[in-house]
Length: 114
Length: 111
Image 1: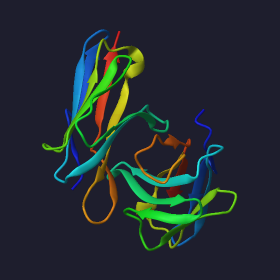
Image 2 (image 1 turned 30 degrees about the vertical axis):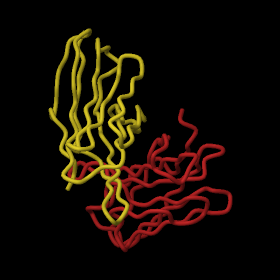
Image 3 (image 1 turned 180 degrees about the vertical axis):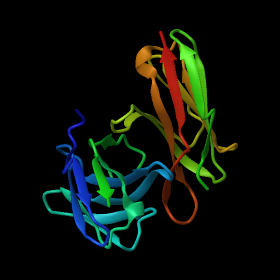
Image 4 (image 1 turned 90 degrees about the horizontal axis):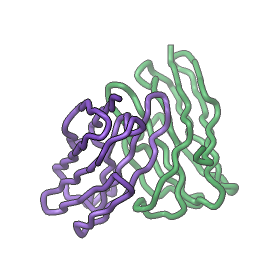
């Protein structure tokens, strides 16, 4: 158990809908990272937040957005969902802003868009 | 743009050694290695920073050659628990900060 929690574990929704994925980092960690893992594109970095502020952006679509709240939990919002958005979404946390620190991954949320 | 890992897949017997390579077309600041078992989240193995430092962790070690923009992961005397998919995560030094994962290497250790 990494200490990072993600909810929900599974999510099935229809195209065009909007969903919110939630992540709680390990106690004491200030950075939260979001990743997408799909069969055809592998593991992709989406976005990083550090202590409530956006720190870095990766391959995140404009239909996706994220935020980190004062209690440090983070939410990833996915809107106008397409079939291609079906994937495993992981969040990870680390203690520092710099990516050169160990990251602890949550168990993931499996999103299926039908 | 995605770092290429080689081999794509490898099958070993317990006790055998393996080397997994990660090669980037971009200059790197750091390389991270992860192992992911089927249906589970990636687990961090180690980070290597610019400077060619080699790190070790029990029977798993890694090196980073920043000039060649390559990193290698060395698995010594493999155990059944080493089975999984290995990913390198690369932090590139180009103008915009980016963190890009490699193509992955599937490793299976047989008894």
